[in-house]
Image (cartoon, rainbow, N blue to C red):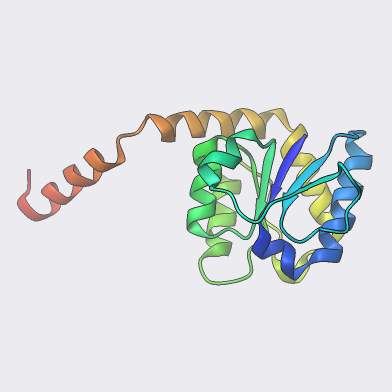
Length: 165
């Protein structure tokens, strides 16, 4: 099972992230739990694939879920990939995106950074990868987003706004 853990989040809560991965692995009885991140260089061999960077649009479709801070770009990439997102917001618009993903049923309830514990993150990861409703909704949402012609929609909205067409 591949879970993408966004580096900005991981760098700030390394101990919590390590504990969460262990808890989620134990709870799901999965030994193939693979976390993708930059800073877990001391992890067990074969347990963690350490990468410096990867484009979200390439990486996320290969993941079972995406754990990240909830920035607009990362959130959009997770939704577009059709993967459940576990958001741990800590700044600016990130809480909004966390609540939006949850309202769309594409991920569990966001965990505010100030309330982050290993158990809460592990529980959220488990929910994201085992709840069939979340999996299905994230997949459907991703298909719908990929089918959109965003540029044409934007042009139509701008034309209606400025010229009333």
